[in-house]
View 1 (cartoon, rainbow, N blue to C red):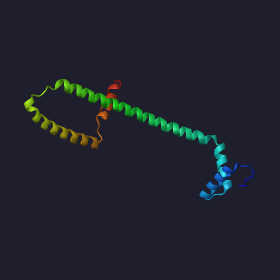
View 2 (view 1 turned 180 degrees about the vertical axis):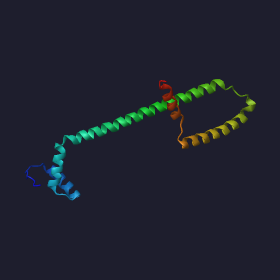
View 3 (view 1 turned 45 degrees about the vertical axis):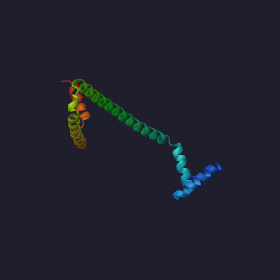
View 4 (view 1 turned 90 degrees about the horizontal axis):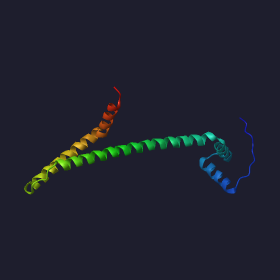
Length: 140
């Protein structure tokens, strides 16, 4: 395809920028200028970029909403457990405190092991709660 010649006047800084870019790419200056003009005149390019950014922002917003919901569920579960434990556990007599501390440390170690196994398996309480909630919301 035969190309049409166009003579234009450029600011010296713009010309230097085009020249440096062309040298880095190993391309003629006219090809760089042609691509820049085509990009400037193409409205689709900016629309596509804006749509891609909007899509990413929507995905990030959904992820943040999910994280906020999960944090809320976690906080409520921990708070409910603490309240229940504090109201239902009687105070220990002074003479049994060392034995209770030892038993507590043993139970804590078992708890940490069980938590590690559960997290490694990919099964979480949040998933179970989500599945239970979805099942209860379906009309029968």
